[in-house]
Length: 138
Length: 168
Image 1 (cartoon, helix red, strand yellow):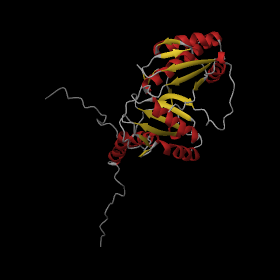
Image 2 (spheres, one colour; image 1 turned 120 degrees about the vertical axis):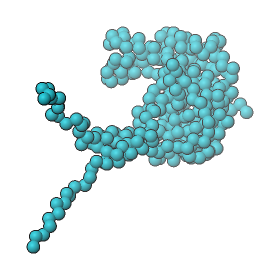
Image 3 (tube, chains in turn brown, green; image 1 turned 180 degrees about the horizontal axis):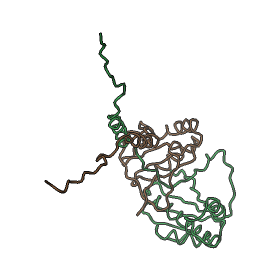
């Protein structure tokens, strides 16, 4: 007759998973709130320049982008535009969002001539807040 | 007669709830972009026709000219881009009403222009840092919001983009 019985733990050996959906839902809601679904299809290729003194744009909803590619093509929202058209587009954006920030995503090898032309158009369209998009220089 | 009692469990099975929410979670995880926009902020001057011409004393303007090859001319002295920071800082210390006017050639590469602006901003940042240490005893990063505003008012950034000239 065996003297020693194997001791059986009286507690259940499973992790309670009842609250798992709640945890997941919390994560889910966080990502749903923080996500911005409106993304653009960028049709030009560009490499951003880098700088040390850069600022973050806090409010992404104020931002409107202008891309200038390596080949000098200009894109606003989802279409390629010509330089003289920028004025009316900028004016329209300014009407929709009065304190719009135009973020210029320009290829680092572009000539300044095109940048100056875009800036003149933006000035005529009264969209004066701009941001030269740049990466943090390490 | 005895009626058979069926003991029905009236409950919605919730064991797959976690799986469903995991699917949603994965979707948002994949589509979300947390990258923040960073860049050099600037305000353009209003269009020329409705802007009044403001006369500024010529000694209060520091002209920074950049040519297509990336050579820099500051007040008739030839330098290079990495030296702008030091020169501008010394000039700003000598005259706190100074306006930095940046003018570039049409053929200057954009990266040189950004580097120039960056150098000028760096000069202002250094000056603000010094002002913060002198006034509050801590560098800019540790200041409160109000202190930061005070320093910004004390050392305002005056960068002007020169009006492009019609040459052709």
